[in-house]
Length: 247
Image (cartoon, rainbow, N blue to C red; front, side, top):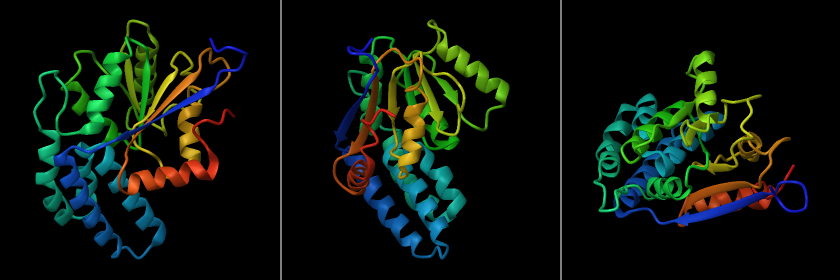
């Protein structure tokens, strides 16, 4: 356990460069999303939809089309070829993804973590499913999932399976899942997409950083170093230093 009593939060900010294919997708996607935002009168709705689209663009490209479809069929058509370029890019000789730099980083983290349990947060059930499909192509081990669309009984089963030392090393979860459930057996948390509300980040880390946690909690935050995502992260950190404050 940690030296000197209370476990600490240890933040790891991981600046990444998107792949070339991803760069094209993000450029196209961002301009389309900003254009679209002009047409949404209701400010809260605009903020919400822009956020969903942008977070998917940066972190779970496989989720974009489903989100886009619900907003506008034109959006789906504009983005589809770029999304598929990224999600269907081949593996390299190390068996790592070549289209998606963030996924590549995550696959490496999982491989290098030697069986340590890792809880990976994304925003929505759509994103969980997309990320699971993406990871399944690169991992030989099964991955546990947790989101609101699962029946409560299945949620319990997935958590128990993840908690089992012989169970999966990785669980993908939305923040909405897991209130009141105990994840202290795990001390590596990945914020795979960065929420724009500090309270949401706190909620995610709080799943494992609570009474009974024996280890320092390692918090990994991958992000694209150029562009909006880095700017948003900077503002978030300034506003509350949420990543390394132990509550």
